[in-house]
Length: 130
Image (cartoon, rainbow, N blue to C red; front, side, top):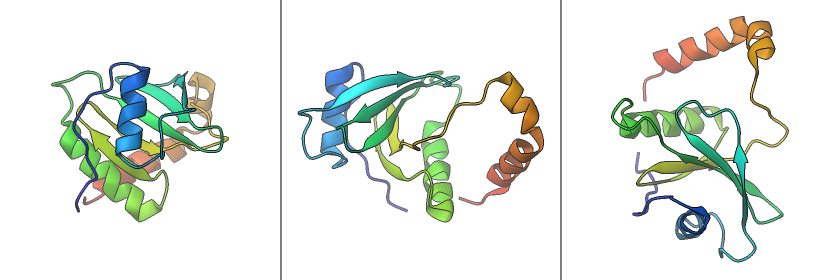
């Protein structure tokens, strides 16, 4: 599976906007805005929007601890299989994904309440052949 990729790293808002436009996610950087998203453990997450649609920009952290190429191939394969969230492209230190509207990061009470479902989803992910 060929993954859409552009050279460059996200280090600030302007570089994120440049990357998402070069990936073809947005036609222009003009009018884009970004908002930090909470919930990333090893990544910095940003919602980038043009006012009509949004994407999630995931800037990788914990470099050297996680094989990001393998993780991205697996994410792209699971995305294709499940249809959500869509994989939109890769750049040097991160990737762009579909932003899932009306979804939230679970806090500890939510994790407890949904533990069985989360465990099943994690088993599916770990058993998935990319």
